[in-house]
Every structure is written in structure tokens, then in C-alpha cells.
Image (cartoon, rainbow, N blue to C red; front, side, top):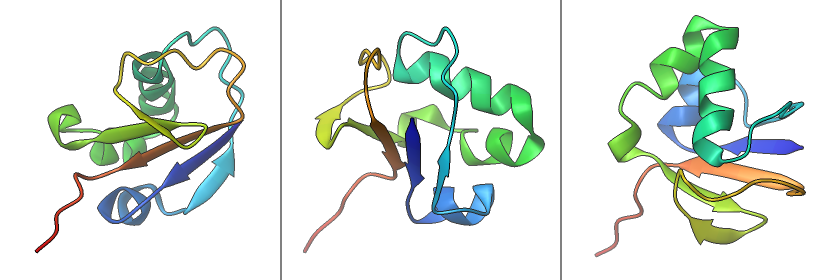
Length: 82
């Protein structure tokens, strides 16, 4: 599955995108837990989950969104406008 990172998440992870084997991750939250277990840079990126938004196959969701069969999961900070 393609995992995309935007804004400060991209900076902390050190990549805009990567291919990730989701293993048995059923939700975006499970995927985050797998990523955090991989490396400290993911722990830094996901240290405040309240500030992380998720899109699964370009559909807005939340960390409890199912990812089974998804081709893409994107993580980004809250969008602001003005």
C-alpha cells in the first residue's frame, strides 16, 4: 500500500511517500502503530494523534477507518483556511 505524508509529518518521517506492507493492520490506527514500531522518526511524526488527519483512497476518514484492501493511506495535519 502507498502511504503518503504531508507537511510536518513528511518532514519528521523524511519522506513524502513510501510503499508499506500493512500486515494485519485493520485500521489506520493499526497502521500508525506498525509504523511507530519501525523507527523513532515515525514516533516523532505521530506523537500527537489528535493533530493527525487521515484519508483512505482519497476519502476523508479518521484513525479508526478500515484500510483492508486500500491502495493508499494519507496522513496530514488539520487543514486550515482563511
